[in-house]
Image 1 (tube, rainbow, N blue to C red):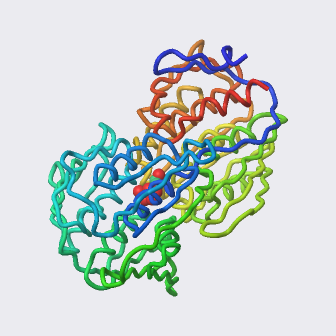
Image 2 (spheres, rainbow, N blue to C red):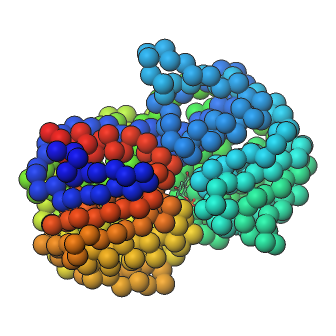
Image 3 (tube, rainbow, N blue to C red):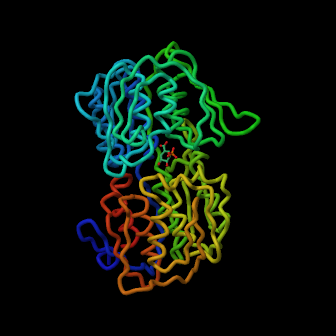
Length: 455
Ligand code: S3P
């Protein structure tokens, strides 16, 4: 059965429409954002931290490798036979060693930007560089604030892109209003602030994911988060006089952004129902749930834990969906979910409009272009906007040609979204090229899909 629906050839896969219902309970790998931060902050803590259910994605393994290169002892624990459990022997805030060669940040914007903040605080020289996609992602957004803090940091093409060369140390605190809604920029400054003289204050007009804040608080570090009358979030991080970071013990909940593909699969596939267990449902991450509910999706969230992050089980049932206008203020809370939302909108009745999402142009690919290119190819009525897209959905959408070839543009979330589109599309015969990038965030993706379509 699998062979008929998903046929693999080197770096591509042939996908055919499913036309079969499923009723399933699944789990997805640990959250990528928290996995990065757990390795980074465990490495900077005074003592042993235990991290279980770490994401073993390519991006997260690059973070483990980076901190090992900086002299931190990070070992697999394997206590319960799980390859996802790690013991980190924290080196303390000032225990990292100067790397002898370039640090490879793979495809990861989060690793590149957060690590740059940490390295800016360390009194040594380092160079960081990623893959061919990462090295075209904008870095001025971190070079500028780190420069204001006193870091000597330079990037390719007049400080625009990686590689980044960093002469760290001697940082002072700043007040900084982050010009784009970006948890990566905020976290980069917060991490540099740990090494600065005096308290650093960061203002975001629209609050973004707060995993760095939550983990630092868990480590007993003085971080204050306030909501000013103008809205947004004001974060104060004490500087180097505040002392060190406590080690911690954390189980990383499932990644909502990975769960999103299966939420979409459940609500789009006739007669189906799916429950995804132990998912991180931090308010700043689940904008997609609210938007899907506005579209008419039958969803149910059961909270199972709240500290240090909110965790829950999500049930999604097949639903008749209608197009909506996505509120622009919801964009940062679902910034990684637009590729899969575009697939859902393609099968919803009526028009869905996304605006205020210009950041999508500087993700792992230009996601607006990638979405428009691929959905047009399978016959979706879609219009590209400068800061989003407009889709006239059709619940009865059928594949147009004999064989339609799609392209991931090297972007994991585009590849996974188009595979879900292929499974839903009637008469689908779709070849998706460039699927290896799925390992960037979700190496278990195909196994999870196969588990559903083979029932
Ligand atoms: C992330 C923040 C977001 C998100 C990325 C992970 C993080 O990026 O798109 O996948 O872990 O902080 P921006 O902060 O650049 O929006």
